[in-house]
Amino acid sequence: MQDIRWKQRFDNLQSAYQRLQHAIQVNEKTPNNDLIQMALIKAFEMTFELSWKTMKDYLNYNGIDVKLPREVIKQAFANDIIVNGQLWIDMLEDRNLMAHTYDEARAIKAVNHICQYYIAGLNDLYQYLLARLP
Image 1 (cartoon, rainbow, N blue to C red):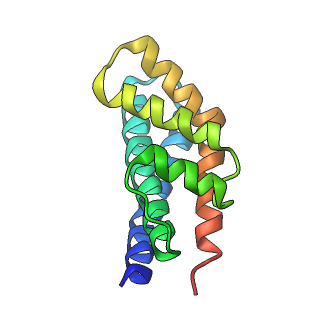
Image 2: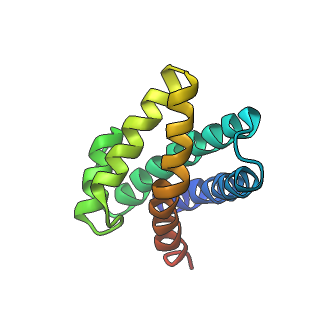
Protein backbone atom coordinates (compact mmCIF):
# COMPACT_ATOMS: atom_id res chain seq x y z
CA MET A 1 0.00 0.00 0.00
CA GLN A 2 2.74 2.50 0.93
CA ASP A 3 4.59 1.54 -2.25
CA ILE A 4 1.53 2.59 -4.22
CA ARG A 5 0.99 5.72 -2.12
CA TRP A 6 4.31 7.39 -2.94
CA LYS A 7 3.86 6.52 -6.62
CA GLN A 8 0.33 7.96 -6.69
CA ARG A 9 1.56 11.12 -4.97
CA PHE A 10 4.44 11.29 -7.46
CA ASP A 11 1.90 11.27 -10.34
CA ASN A 12 0.35 14.42 -8.84
CA LEU A 13 3.81 15.89 -8.28
CA GLN A 14 4.68 15.35 -11.95
CA SER A 15 1.68 17.42 -13.02
CA ALA A 16 2.42 20.21 -10.56
CA TYR A 17 6.10 20.24 -11.52
CA GLN A 18 5.21 20.56 -15.20
CA ARG A 19 2.86 23.47 -14.41
CA LEU A 20 5.64 25.16 -12.46
CA GLN A 21 8.08 24.74 -15.34
CA HIS A 22 5.50 26.22 -17.70
CA ALA A 23 4.92 29.18 -15.34
CA ILE A 24 8.68 29.82 -15.22
CA GLN A 25 8.87 29.76 -19.03
CA VAL A 26 5.96 32.18 -19.37
CA ASN A 27 7.47 34.44 -16.70
CA GLU A 28 10.75 34.56 -18.65
CA LYS A 29 8.87 35.70 -21.76
CA THR A 30 6.66 38.16 -19.89
CA PRO A 31 8.60 39.44 -16.86
CA ASN A 32 6.94 41.87 -14.44
CA ASN A 33 3.45 40.52 -15.10
CA ASP A 34 1.66 40.36 -11.74
CA LEU A 35 -0.76 37.62 -12.78
CA ILE A 36 1.99 35.40 -14.12
CA GLN A 37 4.06 35.95 -11.00
CA MET A 38 1.09 35.02 -8.80
CA ALA A 39 0.51 31.89 -10.89
CA LEU A 40 4.20 31.00 -10.64
CA ILE A 41 4.17 31.41 -6.85
CA LYS A 42 1.00 29.30 -6.55
CA ALA A 43 2.50 26.62 -8.82
CA PHE A 44 5.61 26.61 -6.60
CA GLU A 45 3.52 26.27 -3.45
CA MET A 46 1.65 23.27 -4.90
CA THR A 47 4.85 21.68 -6.21
CA PHE A 48 6.66 22.17 -2.91
CA GLU A 49 3.72 20.77 -0.94
CA LEU A 50 3.53 17.67 -3.12
CA SER A 51 7.33 17.34 -3.04
CA TRP A 52 7.69 17.08 0.72
CA LYS A 53 4.61 14.84 0.98
CA THR A 54 5.98 12.54 -1.73
CA MET A 55 9.32 12.43 0.12
CA LYS A 56 7.41 11.60 3.32
CA ASP A 57 5.58 8.73 1.59
CA TYR A 58 8.82 7.51 0.00
CA LEU A 59 10.60 7.60 3.37
CA ASN A 60 7.67 5.74 4.99
CA TYR A 61 7.84 3.14 2.22
CA ASN A 62 11.51 2.70 3.15
CA GLY A 63 10.71 2.28 6.87
CA ILE A 64 11.43 5.84 8.04
CA ASP A 65 8.47 7.34 9.90
CA VAL A 66 8.35 11.14 9.64
CA LYS A 67 5.43 13.53 9.75
CA LEU A 68 6.38 17.23 9.68
CA PRO A 69 7.94 18.98 6.66
CA ARG A 70 11.16 19.94 8.47
CA GLU A 71 11.63 16.34 9.70
CA VAL A 72 10.97 15.02 6.20
CA ILE A 73 13.56 17.38 4.72
CA LYS A 74 16.17 16.38 7.32
CA GLN A 75 15.58 12.66 6.75
CA ALA A 76 15.51 13.07 2.96
CA PHE A 77 18.89 14.81 3.18
CA ALA A 78 20.28 12.18 5.56
CA ASN A 79 19.15 9.44 3.15
CA ASP A 80 20.56 11.14 0.02
CA ILE A 81 17.14 11.77 -1.52
CA ILE A 82 17.96 15.46 -1.72
CA VAL A 83 21.45 16.89 -2.00
CA ASN A 84 20.99 20.39 -0.58
CA GLY A 85 19.14 20.29 2.73
CA GLN A 86 19.52 24.01 3.37
CA LEU A 87 17.94 24.85 0.01
CA TRP A 88 14.88 22.81 1.02
CA ILE A 89 14.70 24.51 4.43
CA ASP A 90 14.84 27.86 2.58
CA MET A 91 12.03 26.65 0.29
CA LEU A 92 9.95 25.65 3.31
CA GLU A 93 10.45 29.03 4.99
CA ASP A 94 9.68 30.95 1.79
CA ARG A 95 6.61 28.80 1.13
CA ASN A 96 5.35 29.57 4.64
CA LEU A 97 5.86 33.29 4.11
CA MET A 98 4.19 33.23 0.68
CA ALA A 99 1.19 31.34 1.99
CA HIS A 100 0.49 33.81 4.81
CA THR A 101 1.54 37.26 3.60
CA TYR A 102 1.57 39.10 0.33
CA ASP A 103 3.42 42.20 -0.69
CA GLU A 104 4.88 43.04 -4.05
CA ALA A 105 8.53 43.17 -2.95
CA ARG A 106 8.26 39.75 -1.29
CA ALA A 107 6.52 38.33 -4.37
CA ILE A 108 9.31 39.54 -6.67
CA LYS A 109 11.93 38.10 -4.33
CA ALA A 110 10.03 34.79 -4.20
CA VAL A 111 9.80 34.60 -8.00
CA ASN A 112 13.54 35.21 -8.26
CA HIS A 113 14.31 32.50 -5.69
CA ILE A 114 12.01 30.02 -7.43
CA CYS A 115 13.48 30.67 -10.87
CA GLN A 116 17.14 30.90 -9.82
CA TYR A 117 17.47 28.34 -7.01
CA TYR A 118 14.41 26.34 -6.05
CA ILE A 119 13.62 24.87 -9.45
CA ALA A 120 17.02 23.11 -9.41
CA GLY A 121 16.28 21.42 -6.07
CA LEU A 122 12.81 20.43 -7.23
CA ASN A 123 14.27 19.05 -10.45
CA ASP A 124 16.84 16.99 -8.52
CA LEU A 125 14.06 15.43 -6.43
CA TYR A 126 11.93 14.85 -9.51
CA GLN A 127 14.79 13.02 -11.27
CA TYR A 128 15.59 11.00 -8.13
CA LEU A 129 12.00 9.76 -7.78
CA LEU A 130 11.54 9.23 -11.52
CA ALA A 131 14.55 6.90 -11.48
CA ARG A 132 12.89 4.78 -8.76
CA LEU A 133 9.70 4.07 -10.68
CA PRO A 134 9.45 0.60 -12.23
